[in-house]
Image (tube, rainbow, N blue to C red; front, side):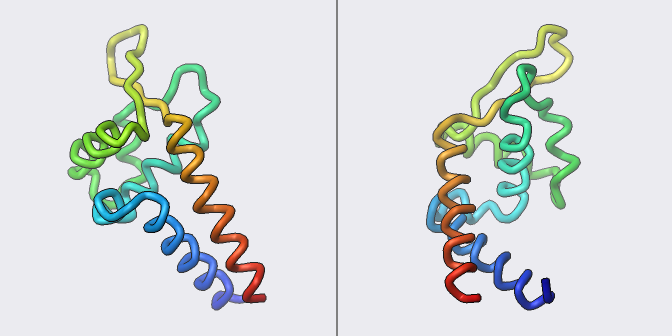
Length: 115
């Protein structure tokens, strides 16, 4: 795949992401998308995702508390407490999964029509 096509795919995903998640979440930047994707790929884990592990996918980990606050307020993530109590655990909600599917399906659809 030529680099131009990859760039077109990434732009299509960014556009669909902004449409699906709205201005408040989009304004938080790419770190928010990375957090959502990390939670998405681990959505079938019975344990969920440790909050501290989300910092590993972020460019600006200092923004994690703000991002999680907004995602929790929009019902896109939910808190689950670990049995050990060492760290807070999160899971992605069905609403967020649906929006991610909308983004990825929409982006794939627009990419396939431009090729």
